[in-house]
Length: 118
Image (cartoon, rainbow, N blue to C red):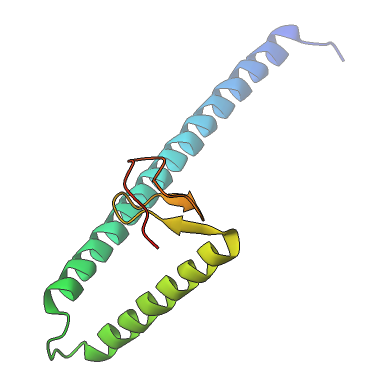
């Protein structure tokens, strides 16, 4: 049985082309999946912005979504309470002018220079 170098070379070239094609297919599929994920994230953000705008426009009105509005209001209040609790634990305050966190006891904001009233 003779070793056919040309046959091995041809098989390697063919295998290399097959691997190259598979790599292109996998790469194309990965790019499409990324594009899909990116577009889904974009849509989620748009839906959230639309929902937020609708909520803010109809806050306090009687609407069919009143139960959802109440749940959102409760969640917002609880979130603010938790943020205040965290600031207290951290010994910090929020600047009323720029919203930046400042060390408790500071008289002026290090970011904008506004007076921090207690």
